[in-house]
Each structure stands twice: as C-alpha cells, then as structure tokens.
Amino acid sequence: ARSALVLEEISKILDAPPVDDADEEAEAEAEADESKEEDAASEESNIDPAAYSMTRNELRRKEAAIQKGLRWAASAKLLFTFSNQSDDNLRRLAIGTLYYGRVNTVQVWQILQSILPEYKDSTTEESETCGSPWASSCPPKTISRNGVDYPPSFVLEAATAFCDEEAALSSSNSEMQELCASEGSDSSTVAIPTSMPDGYYGYTVPVPRSPEDPLSTLLFAPLDNLTVDTAEL
Image (cartoon, rainbow, N blue to C red):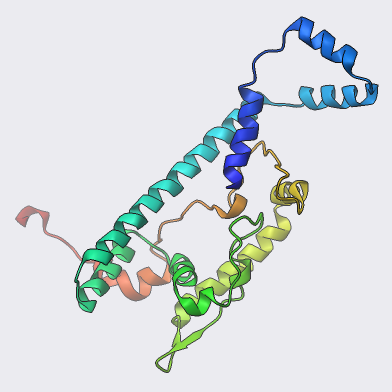
C-alpha cells in the first residue's frame, strides 16, 4: 500500500543513524559533481523532523483505524457464513447496524457502490489513486431491481451533493494537488507529505450521522425521539 511506502521513507529519514564526521568528509571528497552536493545539502536542510514525525503518527493512526474496520468486517462475514438467520433477522441486523453505528446517508451510498454487482461492474477500482476514490462513481447512477429504481431518491440526492463537493474540493485543495503532482504517474515515486490532509489516498475521517441527515429525519426520527423511563429499567 502507498501508506506503507510513505512510512518507510519517513522512517529512513527520522531513524537514520547520525553521520560520522570522518565519513561525511570522505563522502564529500568522493563526490564529483559539486552541484549535486549543493542540491543534496539544500534538500537535507529543508527536512522538518517534527512535521515528518507528526505525519508518521497520523498515518499510523489512520492505518490502525482501517485495520480495526477490516477485523470487524471479517468477523461479520464469518457470522453470516455460518449463521442460518432468516431474511427478516438479517434485515433487522442491517437496520440496527445503520442506526447504532450512526451511519449517514452518503456512507450508505458508498457501501452500495462497494457491494452491489451492478455498481462494481460499471466502476473502476482505483485504490491507489491520489485523487478521490469515488470519482468513477460520480455522478451517482440508479439501478433497477424487480422494476424498482434504486437507491431511494433521498440517497441519490445526498450522493449528488457529495459528488459536487468532491469535485469542488479536488479543484481547490492546493495541498492535495501538490502531493498528486509530485508523485506523477510513476507508482514507484513516493511524495513524502509534511501533513496528512483529509482524503489523502482515499481515506477520509468518517463523520457520524447528524440529526439533520436524511436518514435521521426520514427513517430514524421515531427512534431518536423515543423516550425511555430509566427509573423503570
């Protein structure tokens, strides 16, 4: 993964042993091109260990969050594989996951893009793209199942707004543009960022469902407004 390459390059810089003075002098004498020496010295002087350390810590936190999600997904897959639950029970489980997981409407659309074959066949998976991983899914598309258009209109509207925001961010986010430009088309080229902007290589910090989200106002409002008499519990 690209994150592993970035971490490796940062560790090479931060964990490199100190250079002995004698070795440094011998290396300088062996260098034939003085202009290359100046460029290397200039690049070395521009290294900010504190910024690289913060980037490495942030990237490690994001990797840990992804690994945790993958473990939960593997656990859920194991449950479904060996369970004989009825369709009604599975439906209740899905609804409960959406509700208690505080999944928002855009995230529902993203899940559908990842699991439904009609979407997977029409999109290109670009897990290593520097830009938005949802670019190939925008603008949102409807599919027909049993004569019914899907997803529901409120999900489609939220996805359309999300795609518009992604397009605007990709054109205005100068930091992300610089990172993508520095890496270019060569997959072996690793640009070492001094910060970790949201959306870097497709990872965005998940945002819980808000009270104004369509899932809250259209579906889950009765549950959210349900009062519980804790004294009687």
